[in-house]
Image (cartoon, rainbow, N blue to C red; front, side, top):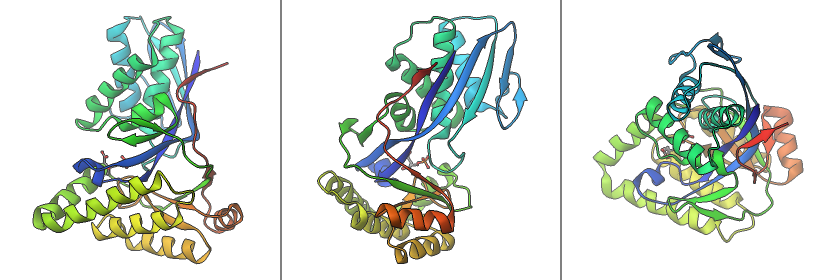
Length: 289
Ligand code: PMV
């Protein structure tokens, strides 16, 4: 059986959300596809490699298979992964691969798991691999749609298109979270105020039709806490000159930049910088025919 699950972008609130502030997150219409077939051994095939259970090359898939087997013992499985979501770019590819593998195995072996149970298993896999994590990525990938975090309240976003441009640098979430913690340790009262601004921006976005100005303010705050880079600053400035307001999405230090603006401006920027234009995705994990 084949299943798919979407990636996500953080529209507002990364880093501040670690300290209890709000974030706005949405699933996007880039999906990871996973096929599971009964077999007498375990085989995992992806664009990265073909392996058995391999916690180094395929950490998320391997832990997902292991966690699934704890719920429903099976002799083996052949997994095939095919993803539209770039890896290490803050777009939730790890959660999407985990959730889609669990759903495909659930269907192939008739385990009868609900989506909530799939989320719970995916949440365990996130912790198995990363040790820490808020659970937001597997939650959004399982359920689809847009959400206010930490409440996990479903949101209705305005009709928007989002340009995603890869900065060309990779983003290591744990490193950037540690860097922000260090800055906060040095000047807590200053950094807490920046988090308050980010929180206000996230809340304001719930009643604004256009995100352009809010993207710019949020990006300035992310720069202030040291998670932008010279390269990202330059990309964002060039995008702004072309009529696209942009910000980091996710942990920063690299990864993806997201931009909003008129469709023609997004197309223009895409032609110059590459990237992909996406939209919020309502549907979470699903079985593919
Ligand atoms: O880069 P991502 O998609 O892993 O997002 C990280 C978001 C942070 O707020 C920086 C950390 C977190 O766990 O919320």
